[in-house]
Image (tube, rainbow, N blue to C red):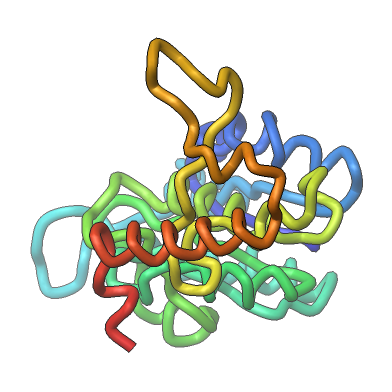
Length: 225
């Protein structure tokens, strides 16, 4: 699976993709993450990629030409399943979206900056807009890293235990049950006896009950359907 990320600040994405699971996924050849500097596609001497908004107003708007040039070049080299724009007014990222996108082959992700991007980019090129929350960040780089991480960990072979991702919170619209490890007794705070019983049926029943109870208490909105 390949991700092409278009950004005006590629340095912001160096660390997220150079460590842990994302790094291992790339070394295994299970995913390819390519970051493109938008300024490389600017045609003016200053390599600027923004301009003043028509109609007045504060802030600068990212221009259509550099994005169009980069997207068209990429599309000339391969087919893409999605061109995603990270935007606070996009659909809210959830596990179902991550699951769906993990089955794709090639995805382009656009990172906005400044006041935003020219609407024509969204109208002509973008197939999907995704938000990671109801708040505004300085740019789309961190949301892009979040999106890629949520997808890559679902690709078969990325996690050493592939069943781990299937039991994560939000899989099945429930939060995960409480989890414990050694020691079984820490200063009088003990692991629930059922987890030490060795009875997988009873343990799974306990986990299901705990997941439902935790979801009911913390995220009742997930149970509304």
